[in-house]
Amino acid sequence: MGRSCVSVHIRSTNFDRVSESLQKTLKPKKYTIRNLKQNVNELLNSENTRGMLLTMPVGVWISVLGNLPEEMQDIATQISREVNCSALRIWLNDSDSWGYTLFIDGEVVDKYDSMTPLYYVSSNQVCGDAGEVNPDTHGPDESFCCYDWRKHYESISLAMPEISEKESSNIILNTNLDPEESMELFLQLLFIPVQYAYYSYEEVGYSDIIELHAKGISIVHQIVLL
Image 1 (cartoon, helix red, strand yellow):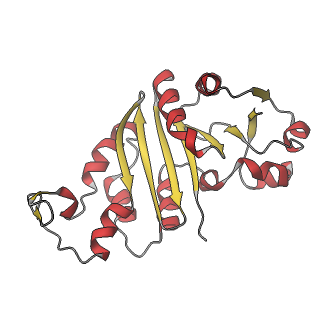
Image 2 (image 1 turned 180 degrees about the horizontal axis):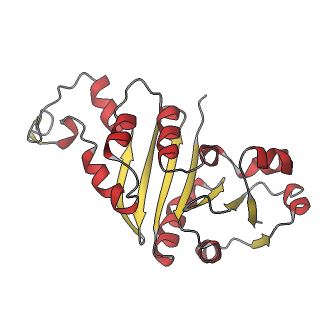
């Protein structure tokens, strides 16, 4: 089996506001929240297997890591709305595909799924212009068109002006890259630590503080869901 993971990356350095917003998002879902701040022994000896971790800001990003993939959409929506920032939900599905959802101020402004351009190529669909007719529906269908990264770039550059169209398109449109490689290069382009995308909450119990720091994981705040 391949790897699957989901993480959320908040474009903010205001750790307290992000932490407060995360707790506010989870409380209505009837989670019991216990905060552990800089208590390494209690953190590593925790027997709870469900929880969320907030990382120290890395550049302009704070990452939300955990093993609650079903909650990540709401978390990205609420935090980006309350902190008035952008958020990126990154996912990998069984190493077969990857993608992201971009939020700005609580609104979804862009979605990317690596299977969208690849599916029609593998099905031998003919690439055409924007007005090409879908033979199944006899109407125009953009999914049958040549894949155009510029539509995504126009949205993502609003939140991340440092990203270049050329560099990002070279990653997205490079069919020689497998989904994991493509996702990792995209994260590097945004200066988000690649390891954060893969790190799961359950790994805390199997790590010591030296191993965590070796992975670049600086945990200062833990929300345990009991």
